[in-house]
Length: 107
Image 1 (cartoon, rainbow, N blue to C red):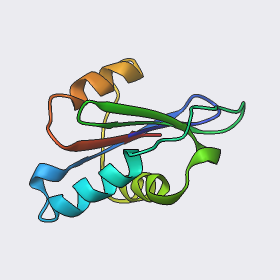
Image 2: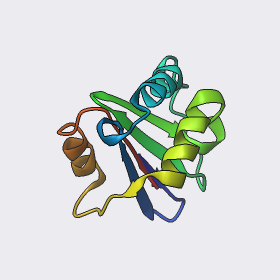
Image 3: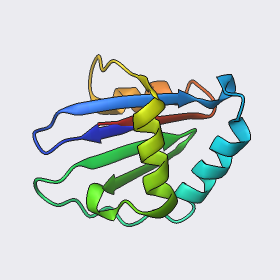
């Protein structure tokens, strides 16, 4: 997951659920969070999030985070492993596809 701040600063976090003892709980949360993502409606000065779960990508503005989507973002930011950005944000997404059941949140 990538969080992009109003100043363009990015923070990326990843959870590799294949290494987790509770992979089914992660899969359930991700499924609920991404079942009906809100439309992408960024607002100047607000943070936006780029989430990737396997091949599904969701862009969401912070003011639209709620319910399971908010829960997913919060937990990945809290306990996810930091991902070092070496290039553009879309390159992080490309790397994400190489790891099965990874949740990326960049901020």
